[in-house]
Length: 246
Image (cartoon, rainbow, N blue to C red):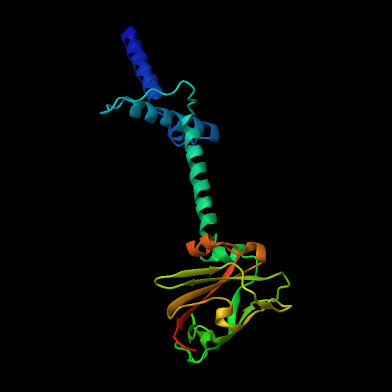
């Protein structure tokens, strides 16, 4: 009787011990990970993901890695991807604030911006505006030998040497004058005063004239002037209709 009771008590104690070993305490389930444990857990997760992805069947045979390929740990690869993405975003931001298009001309020009402040001359009234200098592209009607008085004024005074080139184009012809004989004031204003045919001979018809202003060594060549290439010069346009007669 006593032996049976002792054996029963022993079995009960053993069952309770086994149950205590397999059932975690509440505080054991609620414990938190420190930084090192979290890093180890992440590495284990990424390794499992990489192993699973590598074992999946594929329609194509996976190319063997080059012999000099150094494989980064999984967590470092994620850090590398994050760094590349951040660098690309920074580059896009920098690129977005860089001026482009027509602004490039202003960035590299060797002289200040110029504007027409006088466009006098010719026996026929202007076509586009009472004051042609207020038009985006002035339009004039002139004779081939009309006397003109045109003034180009810089946005701010400049004492640099100034040169002027002229490109004239019609539907059938083109003329380029690499250097015009012009008057230049001490503050950089340019004046063309005299007969039109002193600088260029234009046949009757519609012409587009473009004046290039820059330091003499920065004036465009004919190839540059006709290619719309951005350069170290300013340009002003005027449309001219040449009518026959004096």
